Image (cartoon, rainbow, N blue to C red):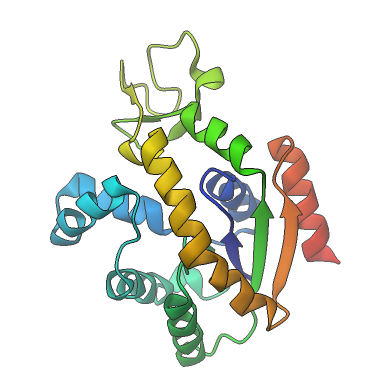
Length: 214
């Protein structure tokens, strides 16, 4: 099964992708995670991407397409994958279609997770990341903790630059102007399943699996 998870900032794409990856036994390919690791490693790509990401803007198409091509060519992607954070522009969507054709992949489903913008802003303002492992948590989950529940690092929680309110609002603006056309692109091709992202993680996941089964 080949899936693209689509939705605005903070809608829960990454969380749902991890659960679906485990249940369907296919890799979760997060362009955000790949880019953040590159920034942490201070690679050439990371240096180019860091300033762009901190503004809340989109990383250029040529960098993103190169990342995806390299990742989808790996053996673990042959039986299926979940794309999280790509494509984010119509140019990327067209390039992805071309790449999938080269890889003899014909069927792909877009899962559109939607939610109210005010709710998403609240979610993003109330989450923190671990400096050591990069895992993201809600403040509710880590309240009173001084160690990361994922890697055990002490005093490592911080608010990412791209989760700050001014950056979030810019991310919403970019999403509406640049990424919404991607959804329209796939809707014209009849490849979109839409699911309400407001609710518990388990309920949203059940909705997604139910739609995929039907």
